[in-house]
Length: 165
Image 1 (cartoon, rainbow, N blue to C red):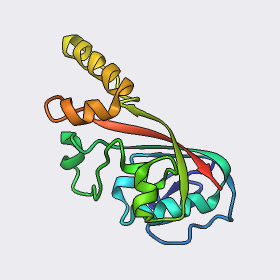
Image 2: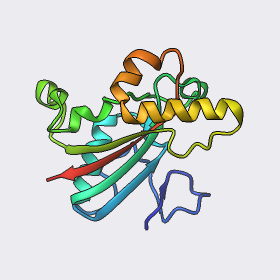
Image 3: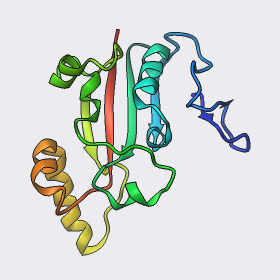
Image 4: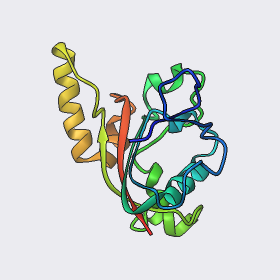
């Protein structure tokens, strides 16, 4: 495991600003990448995804956790530059119409799974209601986003992407 952080006081193995390209890794280095609440802080999501594609081996797993665009918490942090929907990574997925229609990037990832509030532990009576909402959202993400998310917003999304090379 290799940790990357911009903060020189962190315990990271590599100190690097992820807004600076290229990243200090060779092509096809990693089997897996885990980005926990970091992508929303970076300037250029498309360029970051292209760089992740470059440093991943074919078939690598990328797990990305980001704030959901409806969440109050997405807007509280003044350092957040981007918010995400269930279709945000469709622009990189060859099975999604966005990839074909818009072609923003040659970087290609299959969206294997999308999970709402995967790390969040629900508690109390309201937690039971949120558990039911999460179950619905995770079974039918597009329906949740279209019909319920504006009334009952969840907080974050975890995307499981598979690198296609």
